[in-house]
Every structure is written in structure tokens, then in C-alpha cells.
Image (tube, each protein chain N blue to C red):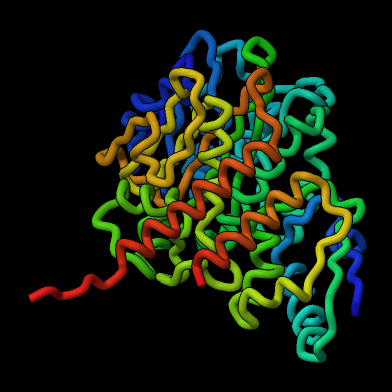
Length: 319
Length: 96
């Protein structure tokens, strides 16, 4: 596999970066970097770190870093995940208020510990902290329950002062969304599987409305909705497909059950990612009260179930 | 009537579905089987995920029908927790 880190990757411009990922020869990994400077989204860091865990460190070739931003990778603990020495000695700063370094979460207990420790680390007021811990908890739990990944979830986050935004990335190298959804539904390709996964009430664990005792098929819809209400980016990449929720235009807030009704872009022919990666931005300037957002969600969710049930009604046969 | 104080088991953020399942199986279902009413006390719980609440109560609505909601009361919920419980209760009834 080959991956090149250009000088800037954020969710708005992530498409060419993903297209450039070479997923062939999965037992080796070569990483190259932009020579001058780099500013990359935590989604990219989580992606590289999780790749690093799937390859023997002796098979990872990491180009010598020349860019000024190399200390950032060290602080985010990327080299630890790649199992290679960075030859850098830096004074580690207190993480509070700025970033959550790459963290591997493999079970429910460590997720609870992570969520408990992470919220105070971010030093946010409740209106900001609530959606962030919600997003992290639900996304990581999705990985633990559905991905079947031996590596669990790789997560990191970064606060960007200039845009007053928290950016979060979560990656796994599990079975991917198509395989997970395909247990109970028949998505024809990766993008259709992502579409189903983002639709409220659809879960890979059952065809039944209301889900199972454990799953309702609501998690990803909630997270996409949090991004939508706040007019933030949300990206999900699995198999050969990527769905990107774009920023809303206009002031009207409308939540859609079908993600294709949202302002979005999509790709269905990217290099294949074995697993799932999610990236999300949360602008702290536009964050809505979480309880208000939940009221909006409730209405959309119920409508979606009603519509799906109606679509399955038998019609009278008039002869 | 039994009252279950959730904070002791789940902390201030209710997200662990395994614990939700355990409470449902070990406390809620046995109480309902004995025809007892239940108070779920969310005091000091400042947030919950939909998946936690789903794991806690959705199967009760499925097993005992919507009327089970007459036998369960949710105490000391803040606005966020109230909203999440309402979502789960609504979609479970919509699905039935």
C-alpha cells in the first residue's frame, strides 16, 4: 500500500487524497510526505494509524520527514502506531483543550474509560461537549459491534483555533459497511450500503422495523444529523465508496431520512478501503442546543418509519 | 414498585449498552414479571446515547406492548435525556 500526505487535507478537499491511496500489496506500507508543511484532518491520521496496525512494522517504509509539521505527527502518536522510530525528541505539551492523540479502543470497557476521560480534556462547555462525546461514543461503539475488526477503533481529534472547530477521525479495518448491511438487506454496491446505513431504522442486524434489542439503525443517522444541523462536514468512506455531507446553504434546517436528499457529494470508484473511516467537523460557533436537535431528529425518524411501513402496505386488488 | 438509581451503574453519561442490557435482564424484566411498577431514576445522569436507551427499554416495549409505558416512570431526567427517551419510545411505538 502507498499513501502520500499532501500539504493540506481536510474534509472539503479529501477526495483527491483518497483517490491517490494505493491499496494494493496489503502486506507492506509506504508513506511519503509533502516536503514543506502539512495540515491534515484527524480522519487521515486515523486512517494511516489503522493501516499501520495491519502491517508488520518491518514492512512499513516511512519517508524521512522534513516538513515543520512533523512534530505534530509525533505528538499525535502516529509513529507509535506505525511501530517506527521518529528520531524526534519533543517536549510533550499538555493535551488539554487542543487534541486527543491517536487512541486504539478494542472493547466496551475501554470505550467507557475513553469517553469519561476525553470530555474534560477538551475543556468545552456542555453545549459543545455533549455532541462530541455523543458522536465519539456512538461511532466507536459501531466499530466494536459491527466491524468485526481485531484492531478495534482508532480515533483522534483536534481543536482548530482559527476556525473554532473540533475535527474528529475514526477508522477501522473491519468488514466494511456493505458486508455489515448485507446481512439483512441487499445493497447493490458500497455507496448503496452507505446510503442504507445512514437511513434511520435500517440496520444490518435485522430487516424488522424498530431493530433488535441492541440495534435500531439510528446511530449514523443521528451523527449525520448533528453535522447537518450545525452545517458541518461529515464524511464516511467504506469499500470503494465515500459519502460527504456538505455544508448547508440557507438558514432553513431540514433533516432528511434519505442522505441523498441532503446537500452531498459521493464517489463509488475509489481505491478500496477494507473497513470504514468516518470524519466529522463540529464548528463551535454554530453548535445548536443538543436537546433542540434531538427534537428535530425525533420527527424525522418517526416519519421515515411511517413512510417505510406505508410503502410495504398491501394494495387492494380491484378487478 | 421498584426504583433503580442509574448513576451508580452507568455514571454521568449513559452509553454502555452492555450495562443497559444487564439492567434490563436482571432488574426490569423480573420486576415486570412480578407485576411491579418501575421508576428509572436518572439523577446525576447528564447525557445518554440513543443506543443505550434503546438497549434499556426497546425490548420491553416489544415484549409487553406499549402499555408497559404505563408501568415505567423516568425520574430526574434533564432535557437531553428526556429527548432521547422520547425518541426511542416514539419510534418503538411507530414500529409496532
